[in-house]
Image 1 (cartoon, rainbow, N blue to C red):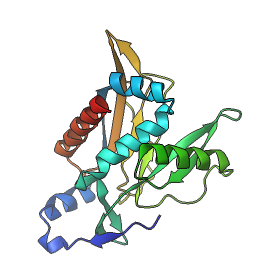
Image 2: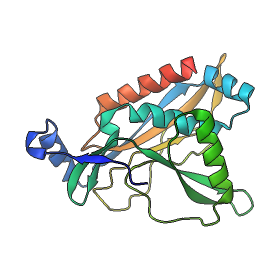
Image 3: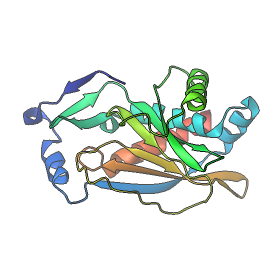
Length: 209
């Protein structure tokens, strides 16, 4: 989607050593699963009749875009920082039970994003419209089961630094609705502290939605 980016000067970048160490790892990506309280969020989107999946994709993208470490990528051997990251998500064809991957630019508002994403999902005929861009967050929700851990296929491309977000089936615990949520990231750019920042940002956003 051709987002703007700037090339990082690795000689004057505080994370250069850490990046190089993890970039040379056999498996440079890792996945963390945690729970989110979606009680308030769920009530609000149900009242507004917004689709849960598209609403959460927008919410996660908004929070992740605010954290610089989630916008770093490898590009042609260099390290770049994108100004903004867009979305790519799986969309299930209920008749065939096959999914297609839909690319949608992030929008200024939830309402606009839902409108654009819903239309594009409905109109896209191909399962795979082309290779994923570098400037996306990937989403692959699995709402049929509540899980405590999830793993992903590995393309073998060690410089693939695109974060991948998943969530399972939400469930009721006491008077709250709980969502298992996962994020896979490249350790060259994202440490545990940054996932912690995302978890806090997401929970605060969901509480105030």
